Structure formats: C-alpha cells, structure tokens
Length: 206
Image (cartoon, rainbow, N blue to C red; front, top):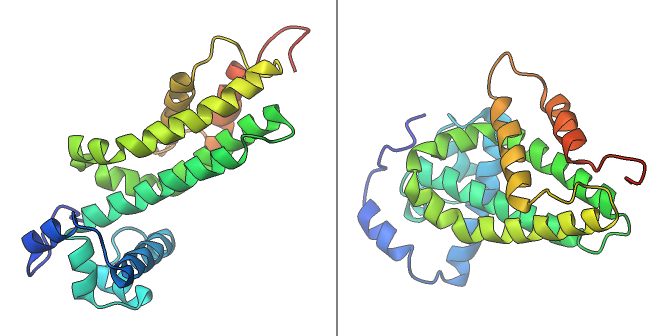
C-alpha cells in the first residue's frame, strides 16, 4: 500500500502543527477521519485510496493530510485508538461478578480484534521505534487493566498463580501473529489451547 510515501503539499508544516493542541473543530475532524478510516479499512482493506476515507469522513483530502501526513500515520492512529478502546473494555470488566468469565472473555475479545486489524498491524511494522514510543502509554494502560482482570481471576482459582500480565500479553500477541500464516490454525483454536495452559489445574481449580 506504500504507507511510508509522503503526501503532497505542506506535510512538514502539518507535522509541526499536529504537536499543538487541536481546536474543537479540528478534534471533530480528526475523530471523523479515524472513524471513517477504521470502517473503510475493515470493508475494503488498507489499500483503499485516502480520498475514499476523506469522502466518508466528510472532510477534504487536504484536511486529512494535515492530520495524517502519510497513510502509515493514519494506520498508526487507528491502531492506537483500538488499543485505547481495548483498555476501556478491560477497565469496564474490573468489577464483573464472574472474574473467570471476565478474564477469558476479554482474551477472546482481544484476539478477535487483533485478527480483524492484522493488516493494520502489518502496515505499521515499518514505523519501528517511533510507533513503539507513541504506543507506550497506551500499552501501559492496557497492561494495568489486564493485570486487574488477571489478579481477580487468580484470586478465585481460575488462573495459574504464576501467570503474569506480560505473559498474557505475549501469548495473545503471538496468537494474533500466528494466524497471519495461510496454513495456521484458526485463531479461536489457538486461543483455546492458550487458555487451557493459563487455567489453574487440580481438584481445587475453578
């Protein structure tokens, strides 16, 4: 899709402007662009022209470029939005009546999201350190939220006591990446094996 290619016209100025607080109308435009991009990518793939995204968002192409100088930056922003949404989803389950169900259902939710956004993840891999720096605060929030779900599940004997949040995230990430191969097992099958390994064993397990 050539995500690293520069868009025409004033990209350097746009990059500097992006660091300043956005006006209310600019914030609305940015939110509309991200919402449209996620919907279009899901329906038509990441190769879709940015003009299509701008049209769906109801903004001019120049407005889209001012917010996202390259398609890669747009993909990164969509992924960051999804990571933030996953964090909120995990936080919403922090007081769930069934800690076991909350933990394992959330893992399934993450894998489903990961598989659906796999093309986006591939698209931003070239960003390397730059994307990792931008994503660090969001990933930290997700790490903490999953940690709460994990601790509650462990407290009721549903998950092995030696499992850590880092291990959970690593296993889920590997599950999503594994499904990228054409001969890989379905994500739900891989996740079932992962969850079986996370569950506490023995007569007293939940």
